Image (cartoon, rainbow, N blue to C red; front, side, top):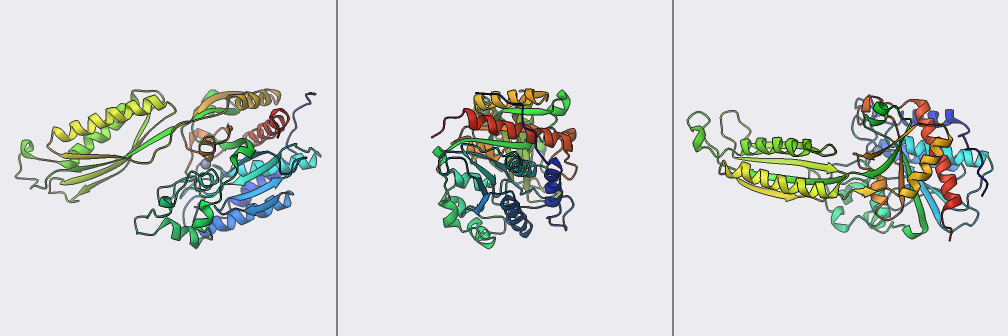
Length: 420
Ligand SMILES: [Zn+2]
């Protein structure tokens, strides 16, 4: 097989222009660049992406799960495919890069292939996945879960804090729950998924690397703990007679930090805590805490869970506070395909780019797809490691480098992967 020079994206300025245009389709009442799923801005944004896909020469459709899909036919249409893409929804008050980079780069990959007259053997499927960021119903990666059959009827019945059903909210933005549940792809026909994304952390910048090759995506273990004590007068109740649910919760918050800090890849976060009654002069009767552990190491996640179980019960027992620990739906760590990592590594070398291997501490559509399809992820640096905030920034040259690695990884995968 002849090995030619790596291909370079034809019009990087178009990629940049697409990112700039996406940054104008936002909810301007919120600081930053907000285009949350289930909002008007997201509907407009995804239709714009579809139009750009059509202009790039793709056959486009929006599937039952709201995923915007464009297909560049291979030389044997209908045979197996290679998939790439990311998401254009954002968190509230988010930045301009996040998943947008992977979608805009995928479009540029298609334009470059066509401009250079390169035909792939496989179909190339470009996807802007619906609702990747966690929404107010506590579910993330909605489109990729639907595509791979990892979402259920029960998920449609989830309610937000106002009692609104997820299924009803989906219908409001034109996604029919029944259609979403049957939007499954034949994943056996998809031979590879490759996602380009910003790192969202500080490692590439610290190591001076142009490109990150993701080895695995973190697992997440989420929990809710309810503490039940007794309300008493804050002035007259001696300290040794209290059943203070607030103190048991506070001790548990520190236990989360202690457990996670003991391992270099461990992460532990308390995201939400409530005290009741919420009054300065009453000993807290009940408290609720929501949090999570993350790690790419499943054994560590199990061990952290066991330690936390022991810690919350000890915090409760020492104060005669009842404890109820509930484990919430969690994600197992997702392992990226070693062969694909090696291919991207080779292509980055050929392009003269420096590279690091690292795991992703953030969740991605790639983590969901990796459960069904051999998957790889390519990262580009995030300035100061900042993300999910208006200051999120990735330099244009880094985005173009990432797009070039994506392009050449796809070309090599097309050559080297089994084809049927
Ligand atoms: Zn993202």
